[in-house]
Amino acid sequence: MPSIRTPAIVLRTYDVFETSTVATVFTREIGKVSGLAKGARRLKSPMQGGLDLLAISDIVLLHKGTDALDLIIEASPQERFESLRRDLAALYAGYYIAELLSDLTDLHDPHPRLFDAAMVTLRHLGDPILRQRRLFRFELACLRELGLMPAIDHCAHCGELVDASGDAFAFGLATGGVICPACRPGQPHVATLSGVTLGAIRALAEPGSAWRKLALTPAASATIRATLGAVISHAIGRKPRLLPYLGA
Image (cartoon, rainbow, N blue to C red; front, top):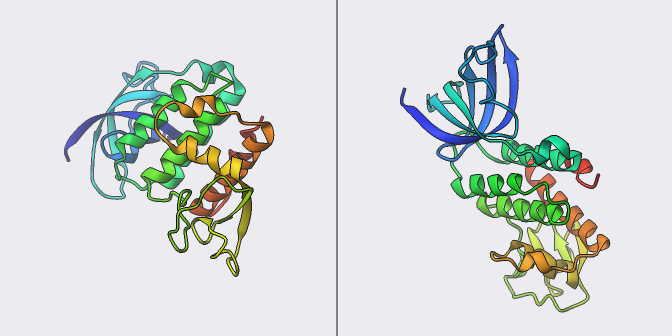
């Protein structure tokens, strides 16, 4: 079995046997991995602190390349996010990021850009002013990277460009995004978005810093949260457990 050294975000852990831990981590090099860390809970374990939840660790693992557990042979902490220790809303947001990485990605499917996006988002969750927007951007980045991004610029049915300057737009989960007026009749599971909300989602999905200057009212933020939550719930097949806590 080849050994691989890679930075990793610790998503979930549970104890096994007397001193060992099974950890699910999202690595930059090989994606999501579940591995057995033998002796990780010993008092003088060299892995002490290396498998703390929602921390960035430098791990070395023996990669089996199958669905069997890999072996984590080294784990040292690289970065902890202090805001998650003192801010409950930031902690909930961090757990939500971990849930998305765990439930939307497959084992051993690398997405280095998604790893980087998660790390940057975790690093800045202590900012209460931009926290919600950063979560929106992470959700959109996650959907885009995994090929689950809904159509927001063109009609999901016919491909026609949709101008966001109108008053209201149809958005279909089953169809895969925004729907033009000509294609709207007969489409199931359709919600209505205002032009302001659709424009805000487009701005949040774009690179650059324009998203920082968006004038989002509480009502617009709530609509964006409901829309992205519905898209992600549709992709996972259930409502994320942490989703109801994001407004706390």
